[in-house]
Structures are given as structure tokens and as C-alpha cells.
Image (tube, rainbow, N blue to C red; front, side):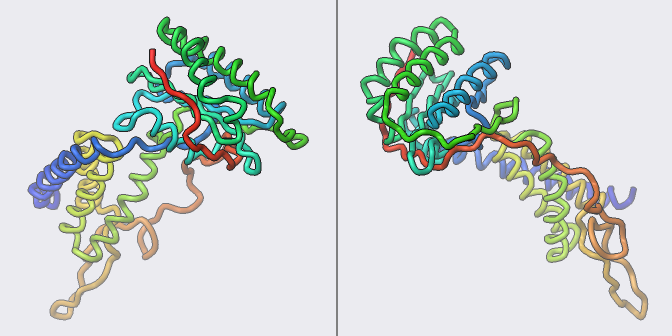
Length: 321
């Protein structure tokens, strides 16, 4: 109780510092490029626009086409591509995902920025003969835009995919490898860090960071610095100053009051007497530890992976609705 009271000003200072750091990063974050999501499946809907049944039907169609032709088509739906225009964003996504077979490069990407009301068909160089810029523009104008205006996103995407696949089938491309089967992704389709992953990062990273900084600066300053770092990181990842301040405050409680992540115990000889100068730690020493046999985040489950060959050189077209 007395220890908590002694640290009360430090708690307030740490929470305020985390909030200020998160707020200070706001203008800079606003100009940062939107991160490219991790590719986990053929239909990456980060907006929840498609129902599970619609997403499954599209995924099955794209998987079947890949088995038959070897070419990879991927759909990405995001809320916005800002601060980039959709062409620059789609180019960056295509470069990162490398859709298409490694030795062929036959990949195609459809990007929908729902709130911007923009759509882009990004074509890898190997497919520019099958889907030239004019054809991509016509598919947007005749298939995607009218359906999107009517709110029928699944219908527009299905029609566009049918037309694109018909064009690619007419191209002289190498046959797919015998027995090649596309991997299935998870059902969520968000492609980003979920709360379980973020929670694991917090409860593992904060004690470790707290232990390191406390061993260098002592418990009080170490917990303050840990709070500032954790709060700033959380605020940046969540794009929320409120979340950053809250995480920083909790980190300060965890390290400064509860003692998790504190420096290892050591004796300070003072007049021939020893004293302990730290709280519990999470590994090693004579104290308790979190063993390796406990449960952790689930990293299993195969997800869709690209063929590693798509070379996107700006081919394709953009449009709106």
C-alpha cells in the first residue's frame, strides 16, 4: 500500500507522458503510408463488406482458376488508400505480395478502396498481353462501377473476375505444376494483427523491456521509460492517442507497482547488511517464472501464399463509382 502511494506521482507522470508522446506522433502518422497487410488468402476484405458466403464463393472461384491455369488473382478491399492514390497503393501492394508464379509472374490484383469510391485492376507484366490497360478500364466501367454504385460489391467482383479469367485463359502461359493446390487462408480475412497477438506482444514485451530498463535506470525511472515506450508504440500501431495513453499507464502499473519485469534481485551491502532491491521477475533467478510449457498465440494453420513472381510495372487501370 505504501509503495503504491509513493509511486502515485510517478503513475500520473507516466500516463501523461505516454499520452503526450502518442499525441505528438499524430501529425506524423497522418502522412505515413498505409501499411501493406499480410497476404493470407485470395480475398482480403478488411472492411467486412462481403459476407462469409460471398467471400467463400469468390475464394473458391479463384482457387479453382489457379489450379486450372496456374495464374493467381487476389482481391483486396480496404477502407481507404490515403494518403496515396489507389494506383500507387496497388503498385506497392503488388510489389510486396508478388502474386503469380515465380518463373512466370502471372499475377493480377483487384484493389477496392471503399470509402474513397476508387477501384484499381493491377496487372503483372506477364499478363499485360492478356489484360491490356484498355481492357482493364472497360472491365471497371462495365462490370465493377455499375455494380458498386448499386451496392452489389460481390456481384461486381464476380463479374470482373469472370471477364479477367476468360482473358487470361486465352493467353499462352505455362501449364500449372501437376498436383498444385492453393493453400486456404483463415476465415477472418483481415490480414492484420488481432487483439490476441497484440496482447501477447504487450504481456511479453513490457516485462522484458521493463527488466532491461529497470536494470539500467532503477525501478522508478525504468518503469517510467517502459511506460513511455509502450504507450508510444501502442498509440502508433492503433493510431489512437487514447489507447497509447492507456497502454502506457497499464505498463507503468505492471512494471512500477506489480514489479513484473523488474531487475534481478541483488544485495547491496550497507553496514554489513544486505537488502533486496527488486520485485519479482519473469525468468531466471530464484523467483517464479513463466515456463515454456504454457499456452501461446496460435501460429499454426496454413494460409494462402503467393507464388513469388509477380512483377508489377504499372499495367492496369483505375476507376471510380
